[in-house]
Every structure is written in structure tokens, then in C-alpha cells.
Length: 214
Length: 214
DNA sequence: ATTTTATCTTGACAGTCGTCAAGGAAAAAT
DNA sequence: ATTTTTCCTTGACGACTGTCAAGATAAAAT
Image (cartoon, rainbow over all chains, first blue to last red):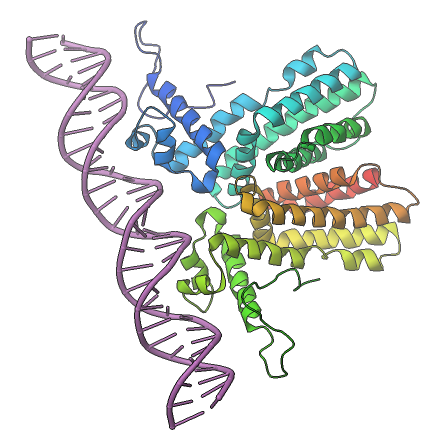
């Protein structure tokens, strides 16, 4: 669920050849570089992120990228896929443990607030890359896949919430994702603009909305 | 409602001085350049749009921009404000003329389809610039203003739709905007990806959703 | 210990970028 | 008709970009 989606197309690497073989140093370094890239992208945005800038957030120099990636586009695509694997299960723990509507609501709101507070830069990157996919074909497939995964995640929360109230969600999966995603994006902007009311207002919105739609 | 929001800070221009004074050639040229810039931005996206590229979509050369704008940022901010004025009243005609829920729904859906079909490049630019505002302080104020104007526009539609059914909107203005904006962005991506079902599916979603929320 | 392979750095390449100064061209004022 | 002002082009600047070849360094294999 995490690593298999991030293949390392190179030679015939990491066959189950022997016990002492360095299992996949190549892939490990790709991940290491991707993490440096994500950090830089989250800080500067897609338009201003250069390979040399990424390299300064790692322990390597700028030339290393063409050893591990064919070009900048492939690096960023790899980043997008890697980022996906870390995101789409964020709320599953809450869904699995909550036994009542109130508990699920409370757990969801708490995680939502944590996310927007602690990971704002990484999420603005997500919105940036999704916008880039409107222009750059190479990004579309991976971005659409993440979008679908996030939609499924929201659907799991909402349908469980409905189930705990002996109801069914009132709107489609797509509309559900749209409204939560839209609200998140909106209050992320306000939060980054320095509005201290952004997070509490956001949580109030969600608290009022969720019982209506599910 | 259109021009006053786009001031031309330069000297003491266009005082009601005389009859033969060229009323505001300076502002007119700024608008002309902004239109070339918007065309280029819609085509290439923020990250790949250069002043030289914009100039090639106009009848001037790249040096002209520093005569009319202090720098690239100011040019793009001006574009954003100019773009706003053209967008926020798009559906007002429909709201003003429709006398029944069905007529309002039909008019809304038709304009919505036209918009995503005929103005996809300009709208992907909007999502791009909104994402840029998450990184670039200079954009935030103008982007937030557009967001608020669009939210008010959606609210006018939905509350009129509710009124025609002797109801009131079931969710907040912010949530309403979020869901329509989120759906629009989603199906814009699919439409640009070449999915021929994108627009009809989008309209079906909206048709099912609007009666639920208003 | 020596050879071979894997990994990373360095430095340069051909472009592109925003910016700006100098001056030509056009328009307006005199 | 001449001067003055406005408008726009040209060409250059320093900085930055992705890319890549050549070679240094480190690791592994022999």
C-alpha cells in the first residue's frame, strides 16, 4: 500500500537474490530526495522550486538528481505519488475506533484542526500541484488518483457517520468531497494569511455541515 | 462597477481638465496589456508565463511592461482584479429573469455548461492564481476578494432558488460556495483531460445537489 | 591489494528570466 | 515648424534555470 506504488525503474534491482544484498538502496535514496523536494516545494511552491534549491535541503548537490531521476518532471511526479501514500489513511484510525456519532465528530474535528495547523505548507503544495495538473499533462494521472483516494477517505468518514445515526449520506460522494475540500482550501488560505479565527471557524463550519449531509 | 476598481496610480491623470484630453489612454493600455497577459497565463499557467511571452500575445515588445507596471507582480495583481470584474456578474441575468425553480435551474445549468466548455483555460488560471496566493502574499488580498465575490454570486443563485420553492438554503454561504467551487474544479480537470462525460456528469451532479441544499 | 562498479560532485553549456537605461519614434503642445 | 512630452523599442546586465559530461570519491567484488 505504500512502497509498491512507487516503483524504481532502473535495471533488474532487488530481485530476491541473496540475503546480503542491500535491499533497495536506490529506491531508498529516491525517497530521501523526494522528501527534500517536498519540503522545498511546500516552502516555495512549484513555480519557484529549482533543483539547486531542493539540493540545499538535502545532503547532496544539484547534480545528483539526474542519477536518480530522468528529469525534473519525473522527480515531481514521484513526489506526488509518495505524498499520496502518506495522506490517504490519515483519518482511518478515527473511523475505526469511534463508536458513536459524537465520538466520530470529535475525533474528525480534532484531526482536521491538527492537519491545518501542523501541515499547512504541505497542503498548500497539494493545491498548487493540483492546479499545475490543469496545465501539465504529466501530472494529471497522479493528481486524479490522489483526488479519488481523498474522496474515498471522506466517503468512509461520512458514511460511517451516517451509519452511526442510522442514516445514509444525503449527497453524492463527489459532492461530499467537493464541499470538504473546498472548505479546507478556503480556510487554509485564511490561516496562512494570519487569521487566528480561521481554524475555529473552519471547525464550526464542518460541525454544522456534517450532520446535514450525513 | 468595472473600471473604478482598477485604478491607474501614476500622476494626476484624467482630471476633468478639458474636452480634448485623451480620457485615459494610460489606463486603457494597461487593460490592453492585462488582456494579453491573461491570455498567456490561461494558456501556460503562472509558472511558465514570462513577460516576453506575454508581449508576443500583444502588439508590443517586452520592454513596455515597465512603463505601465512597476514589476511583474503588479501586472499580475492588476490582471487578477481585472479578471474579477468580468466574472462576478455572470449569472445575475439568469437570477433576475427566472420566475420558477425549474427555469432558474435550467438557466443556471446552461450557463454553467457554457462556462466550463468555452472558458476552461481562463478558469484553470483562476485556480492556479488562487494556489499561488497560498505562497505569495501579494496575491492574497485580491484573491480573497474574488473568492468573496464568487461566494456572494453563488449565494444569490441559491437563495433565489430556495425562495422560489418557499424554502431557505440549508447550509451556510461558505459551504455552498465550497461545494460548487469544488465540483467545478474537479470536472474542469476531467474536461481538460479529455473526458467527454465531464460536462454532462457535472451538470447531473449540480442538478441533484441544488434542490438538496436550497 | 587490485580491479570493477556504484555513487556523487564539479563545472560548464545554452537558454531564459526580470529589470532597466538609453535612445528612437510618435504625438502633442507651443 | 519647432520644441516638449509621451510612448515604445532595443539591447544589454547579472542572475538563474535544467541538463549533462567528465571525473573524483566511495563501496563492493575479485
